[in-house]
Amino acid sequence: MKDSYHLLLKQLDGLLSAEHDPLANAANLSAFLFHNLEQVNWLGFYFEQGDELVLGPFHGQPACTRIPIGQGVCGTAYATDTTQVVADVHAFAGHIACDAASESEVVVPFKHEKAKGVLDIDSPIKDRFTDDEKALFEAAVVIYLNSIS
Image 1 (tube, rainbow, N blue to C red):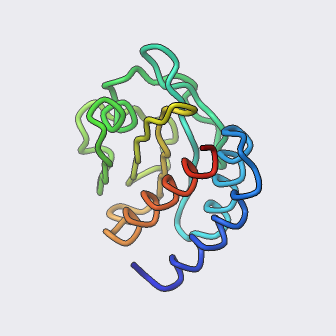
Image 2 (image 1 turned 90 degrees about the horizontal axis):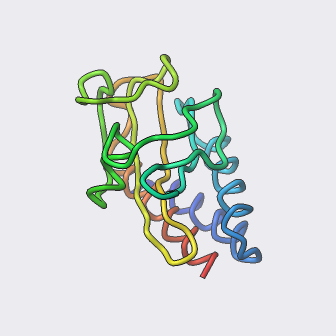
């Protein structure tokens, strides 16, 4: 992982460590990463409610408010409990287009006793996300979950 990403994670940990509310920390995580990353046009959370993922704190254009679990990139990530890295969202079967400008996406699922959902990151650039970004976002989710424990 890039050195600059290690620094971002350290700063994120400092930002979230004093607060334990899941919603407050989701809001700050979204704002922090959105404003510190390049070529990202949407970054935020969806939280599990029954058989859907419901929009949580985010930065970017208005988004889909409900995504059925198992559908789209977010629903697939949550249903399979695996991070999805999609180089071209238009090639992903069943992609749900919330922002027509999005070309690539990373979705990290999490299932914690206090919060269940996904962290969703979109870019207007095809093939924007590398293994470094996947590791960054997975580590950010770990920091988030540790902060609400």
